Image (cartoon, rainbow, N blue to C red):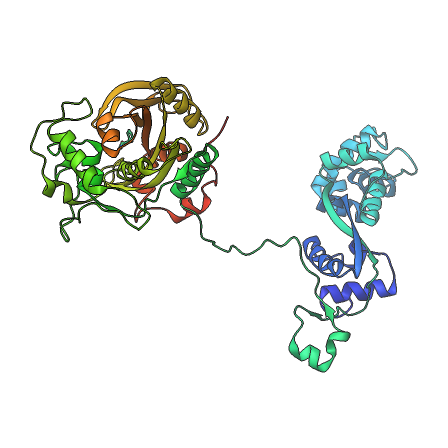
Length: 509
Ligand code: PHE
């Protein structure tokens, strides 16, 4: 065999003679090794090759014996032909030296009518010569490793003289870049190569465009962020403006009193609301900048009046309203505090007709509630909030809007249930049938803001305001099939889940 490693041997073999059959040039080398070497050379365009599958016939030990010594029946015949007087079985066994050959051979020789019996019971040859076809077949197979007659080959296999095996071999030819040595390839162009000029003659390794890129482990948006951005898109396409919700701490005034939540309301209890301990109280309400034309003193007085004594046709709650209570600082329990602030500012605006113009506001941000934490509740969550202010709105209009709004999230067949909020009348909880759970689930809370709230701000009597809220977590958990909120928020979150979760969840069918 030629010297060197297998690729080099292949190149040398081709140099002498192209094409080369691997089965002839490298009969002892496993085909997988040959293929490995060929692929290396073919990737450099030095050789090309074709794979040839074929069946090879090989002799079993008994077949080998027949090829060398003849078939059993022929050996029996030859022994008898040499003995003119004929032989007994014992004598025949002694002559041939193999009982088994005699046993099988004499049976076949009889059937072929090659031998017969003498009168005294001995065996004798019945012909002058015979043709040992089996021996010829074995010799053909031995030298050609195949046999032209497939039926006969199958027969020989059955007789356990021959076996076949699958052989993979290769027809190898020179290709365009054939050479006797594999050129050294450079993987990078280096400063040294440029300095020495060796780049001019260097062979560069080709790009492997099929290689998979390394896993970059990129950052990923949190599922809540993904659903949030989809919801923002829905709001924007429906003409909403985003409210500035960039503060978590509110005064009781904006969080509760402006919304006509009485100061004894259970929601204002320490059990339900987080109070800030330092500082404990807020300044009196005031405008945030020079453009703020609000008369906060008058507003404060209106709020106090409507709670304590009633106003705008309402009899109020009739309790002594406390200014200290209203200044307590809380972690906002809902973003409706911001809606109240925005509606108050809307009341200061003048449209072309000198009245506050219609407006649509939304926000999606964090709120805090002093709740017992369990599988579906955390002490903080994200509230999606929407507000529509316009003249002569009706409850039917609110329901129509909800159908459209939730329809854009893929949530249909809404059901409404009477509910109570201190700041809306009427109020409706919104339900939708959840196919996975097989029941109606609450998806939001809504209503028309009360006159006590809106007229205190100075909004015209015929301006009506829809409001609604839902949690961002609820639709996200439903869409991602999450049953425990800790899989979505907190230290137990699986980063791979974050990375692999789809970008868009709200199916629009
Ligand atoms: N603030 C309400 C809540 O926390 C949602 C809501 C907003 C309801 C506006 C009606 C009007 O669920």
